[in-house]
Structure formats: structure tokens, C-alpha cells
Length: 164
Image 1 (cartoon, rainbow, N blue to C red):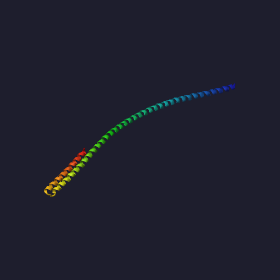
Image 2 (cartoon, rainbow, N blue to C red):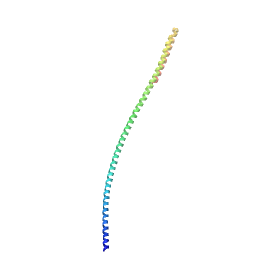
Image 3 (cartoon, rainbow, N blue to C red):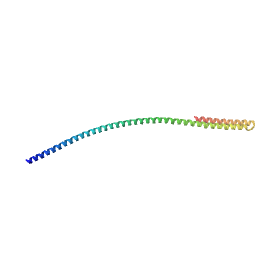
């Protein structure tokens, strides 16, 4: 009987020990389940925050892209306006260059004509100062006047042909 009692005591000890182990296992399981739920909540929260952040970044990227596109379009429009303006200014410069060339040509021709006229006046005045017989003096004066007039007509016709 003693053996049976010892065996029973040992079985009771073992039972108590197994019940204690079982209680510890249930407690550990409960803690693990609690931690698992907390981890799932944190995971869900992180996922939601990530999705929100991703959405905000996409919206920011869309705004930046739209702003960049608008700015690019404005720059292209300004470039086109500047090209048009530059073409007009360039055309005006060409026209002004042509006018200036005409004016300088006219001025040079007038200077040439004035120089010829001045020389002819000097020749006329110098020929009048010579003392020649009356018939020779009138012939010489007439010759110089005719010569100067012919030169003047020649230059006037040259000036007209240059302007055409």
C-alpha cells in the first residue's frame, strides 16, 4: 500500500505540476495572442500611415508636375514672343541700314557735286581775273561755264541713276 500511496502521491505531484505547466502555457498563450493583436494593430496603423504618406507624395508630385508644365508653357510662350520681337527688330535694323546707306551715298554725291561746283566757281573767278582781249575773255568764260554745266548735269544724272 505504501507503494500505491507513493505512486498516488507522485501522480498527484505530477498532476499538480502538469496543471501548473498548463496554467503557465495558457498564460503564455494569452500573452502571445495579446502581443500578436497589438502587433497586427501596429502593422495596420503603419500600413495606413504609409498609404496616406504615399497618397500625399503622389498629390505633391502631381502639383509639382503641373506647376512645372505651366512654367514650361509660359517660358515657351515668352520665347516665341521674343523670337517675333527679335525678327521685327532685325527687319527694322535692315531697313535702317538701307536708309543710312542711301543717306551716306546721297551725302557723298552732294559733297562731290559741291566740290565740283566749288572748283568750277574758282575756275570762273580765276578766269575773270585774267586780262585777255575782250573776244578771248568771253570765249574762255563761255567755255568754262559750259564745261561746268556739263559736269554738273553729268553728276545730277549719276545721282538720279544711283537712287533708282
